[in-house]
Image 1 (cartoon, helix red, strand yellow):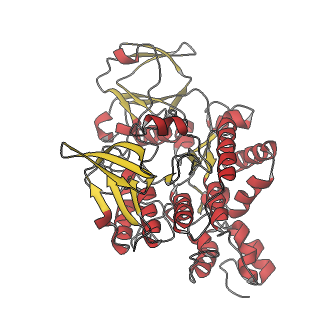
Image 2 (cartoon, one colour; image 1 turned 180 degrees about the horizontal axis):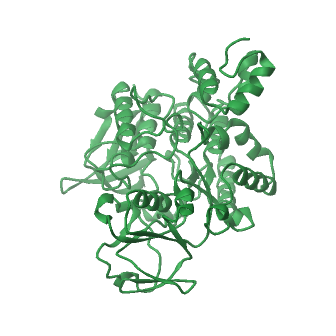
Image 3 (cartoon, rainbow, N blue to C red; image 1 turned 180 degrees about the vertical axis):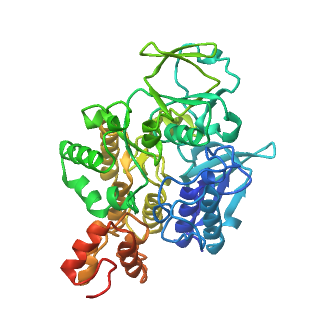
Length: 499
């Protein structure tokens, strides 16, 4: 006897992890995927994926997976996108999820019906519909390119045309071209760096503002062990916005450096206005004059691009990296109105539930800085535990207050941070890491990076091996000064060996 039927929309990491968790709680799960294979963004053959064939991750391997996923032997710290897809496929096979997936099914409608939900989809040109008790929307938020409003953009005559970073599938086609990249966040910086390193004609970067830029590693230490630690997540909940911004600015200038020192524009003095993104090579390429940073574009005349400072360059191609709109066009008008759907967000309690839509959950549709998989795992656990009875559903009062809090958050903060979101959902499921009487674990926990294993130490479905994993990982990946300081306090060397 199952606990009911659940439709999951999307076979990316969020949808597949949700399927794993809900099936584990006794639900009859069906995953709808418009592509003919799974993987979502990590399957570059998927028309809903913005990944290009040679792309590597910009986040470390241990943060780009869940506690139940494992990269294949020989995978480096920053895996190829194909290696991430291999890992996802292995996960699906281990937990026998493939037979739960319906491929080539484009969901066209989702509406409330008879105490549940009606899901409509198109497959092989035919239209179908089916009723489900519950639905999880895990479509992803990075598959509908947002285009900027620039005078003359539609009439650009450069031989390479106008390409959104989402459709940047063949980097070699732009060799020997002059390129103008629009945008100042991670996708635009990665594309500009990619082209610059291939020795293209000239790369210009047009941006509205200069963000602080963090590389992937510092002296052999992945960024996640510096910027996304457990103590950092805990501080977010106990600090004021001003304190957090001041701390972030100090950290960014110390570890990443002020972009102006590389020859890029200086970020806004107000950290909230400046913002932050990540790119391993961008600032060094600016310093080498291989990326020419310009202000935003004022107008385009044929193949001539004029910037707001009055300067003009000839461009063969314009590559746009200005972000994405949230695309949930299949939601019924009633559901869309209830969650206040806009092109950039929806209003939900804890970014997951709405009090007027029982049995409906949204996974991973919030804007976030840092890798998603660890957060998606904790969010999917919360949904599965609430629906399955392992945890009580939040009360109507709590859900309504949660929606109000979400509106407030999205008004003041454009994005959430990976470690804060993972801890948020872990607290909701009672999986906040606890050291107990383990002195070594107590010493290292605050400095640990946010991984899926960190949230399997305590709480429901804790894994006996998680503590050993977290310890070994800390002693092999944390900054050497941190390991030395903690080691000296607990009688260990910098590798964790007793002394």
